[in-house]
Length: 170
Image (cartoon, rainbow, N blue to C red; front, side, top):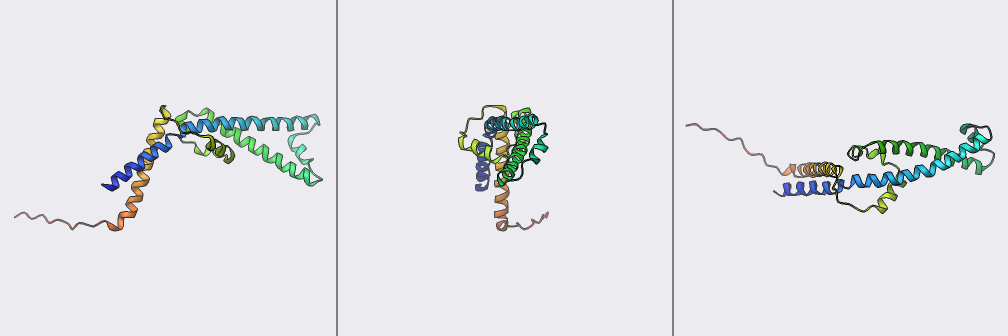
């Protein structure tokens, strides 16, 4: 009886927690779009400067040498280009997905800076959408399953085996 109550509580906790995912992912997308917009300005500015000097991006980066500052700046720019490509790719996939499809895309919410900033400002909302209902159901099943398995493992040594009953037909 206690085990069933605990698994039900685990399911409800999972439902409550995961029901917030659609709203959190929407807020993450908004922040991610801001990150991509800011990086696109940096990338376009660098590419414009390179083009004004008849250089490709790679050729312009290759010319950033000779001093410690230029070498460090080259690494900064290379990291900015990688970050821009990664965030743009994730943003594209997240925008194309429906709120329900995004439930299967937590790996697209992988930028630590954007995730932490979103989490810092996030306030839970009532899940009144289809995506919220689907996420709640998935969270309930996940929480119920996790608690059920954990209880089974913890209580397994205490299970008693009942002796086999003999069928006496006299």
